[in-house]
Length: 136
Image (cartoon, rainbow, N blue to C red):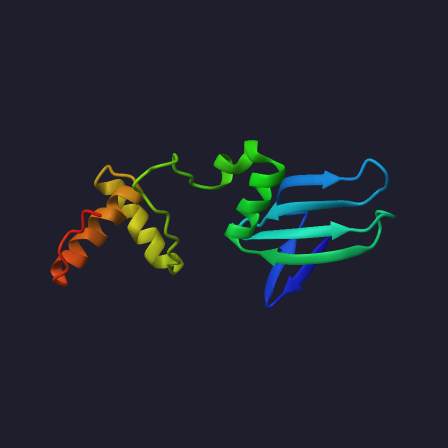
């Protein structure tokens, strides 16, 4: 199945099937897929197993909530999660491809993970901007 939504292609043939759930009493099913570029989408098929009732992109947060509810064992495979009580917070930042590649190359040249490299760069930047470290 393939749909173009808001200029973006969502195709089950090229995407990774993350989870599919169904009914024991009919041919109805629904699934979560992830495109090669990392976007999630959801498909819902009616009871005859033929008619697509829903085919739409979903946010990372929506995909994570669905997996937490229906396939908890897959959550850590697709999302960064922290242990309860952790003093960390996840933040998603979208970068142009050329900048993302430069960040990855810079981190590799410093023998650091992208996360560690970006954290140091952000800390340096906010400090230079005059913001003191917060210890909340």
